[in-house]
Image (cartoon, rainbow, N blue to C red):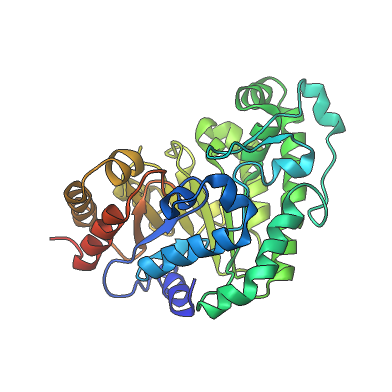
Length: 344
């Protein structure tokens, strides 16, 4: 992210949106490698492929802000690997972390990893160290400490159904697991911030929020997210593209000031639920419109979304979730052109 993009983002979060409609996207391994023309495994294992793919995106679409920007990651395996999860890496499919908790009693023996040396985390950090000079030479900086959220990681370690069942039947054990993951995440986020002084944002991704009722989230999730977002940074960014009507009103209490949602709710509804205190990044349908639609359909959907908003002060145009597989350059260009025109 360039200095002007970062300043525009902070201004938008403060309610001082720059003139016109800003646009941005979360981009990572589900979209970027194949869009660049390389298998996913190449993207994970080659610094040059990783760097050049990111560089092409920012060069082809300079008016878009990409989050978090030069994201060093190994898909959903990144954080679970630190806990000892076996990770599978097909050549051109999404990687997968295998669960390590077979019974709820196994939670008692889960150890909190050291992000300085455990799993894939040292590789994630070292990729950024090795490429920091190239990133800055391209006019960008490392702005975010990034991680999957505590509920998301717990669900990978245990299995989503098993974690949610434990949350209902043995809430103390589920809370203990989330507590261990949160302790690890706090150390991981702090390590990223210590390593790269330009970091001024925290970015957490956690869809499991959308599978919890409000009482359960208040008891197990809310305190952990408040702890993780309780940091001296300008941008506190949360992605949850699962249903969010139950949790959205809690976003300001969580400390979130930038939110990427799914498509189950309108931005107008979210503005009301959050009292317009949170900047919204969304929410063109990612698969059915951005990936599968024609450029004309993307233009119509984008124009209609912009026109639907009476208040655009805390709004960044995007898709509802991260950039999905299969989105072509022509559809991204159609969205950006419609954003530039700013509606009807």
